[in-house]
Length: 464
Ligand code: PLI
Image (tube, rainbow, N blue to C red):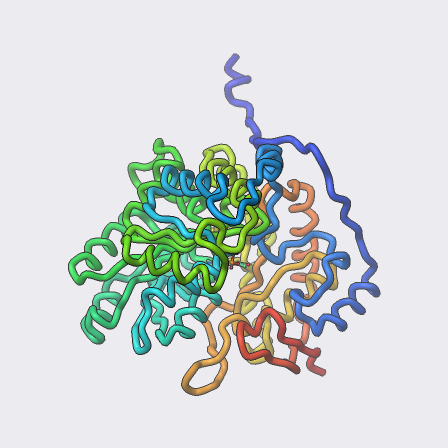
């Protein structure tokens, strides 16, 4: 009896597999050709040339049988689709926001939000930039200012809530510019660019209090809010017995509205929404969405997409689901830590982030170490990852020079419910092999740079 009690008990994915998609392997020669054709940018590879695809967790999840069944219940009426009301109901029940405008994906919501709330000359503070979010703020005439805590910019700092806003930075910004110039504080759960790092509820409450004093809104980029809730449940005092759904609801209750990419937490391949509590903002957004996305009861989505997203929202806040989801990310991260591979710690919610500065210390940042490392991993095994460093950070609006972020990372992003532990083992082995050969790796030169969001389409060639 005693022995049974002591035995280790493993956990497993809370689902079983009903259908499979075959993947294929390539030779190193084939991958070399594919990489050259793609200009050493993993975004430009054809998916058929990829073995294990860790480019992104966005739109790459496996839907459940319930979600697939939901697709068959698509009400494709132009106006007033039943599926819109199911989505609205899910957003109100699960997240607590009052008004919902569907959009084709997260950046559709960012576009409408920025047009509704930002005036030229405004300042938008946030807990680290996200590429599309910042661009929409800038296109609306605003300037993004990073007010995340310093720990977030340090890949080795073990602070459990590296997504937190530094209240002194925020307060100073309000003092310098005045509250009237700050339409809202943009707060992301979790913080993608910092390595999938969470915000604590304590910090959110403090942000709420400070902004309330100054009459400033808080807008929530809730793309990975369920993953953020998992970290609160694990590490924030007092929340160890609180279900994920309650934590998610509490996070949202501290904010005035949200942009949402359904392609992450909500387990769908396409979809998003803008949620707003202030009716006047909703009225304006629901009018603008007609111009850019579609009628306010479909916002660029088919009825079936809204149904699948509504079902996915409920599935995303299940404790077993989220434990297994982040558990798999941690499984991969721990293997790399055990082999001495430098990664961002603590391990984030949606991926493992390699620290390219420590992985390739001989490469200057201007020769794109993270971009180089992503290319090398692909070449080694056909595992596709992506750059989150100087290429993603773009250029300074005033000087035109590269932005040089502290974090120079390669993201191994884990799609939800798609890969097994064995896939994670293969990935870890490939990264470990590249790590063993790291001293021989040379950098890249950028040969083509697009104007917007350059990381998606830039091209490179190897330095001699
Ligand atoms: O890809 P969208 O347009 O549905 O969502 C944009 C978006 C907004 N906020 C955050 C934190 C994101 O991570 C995000 C999209 N992320 C992508 C595509 C990614 O690969 O991380």
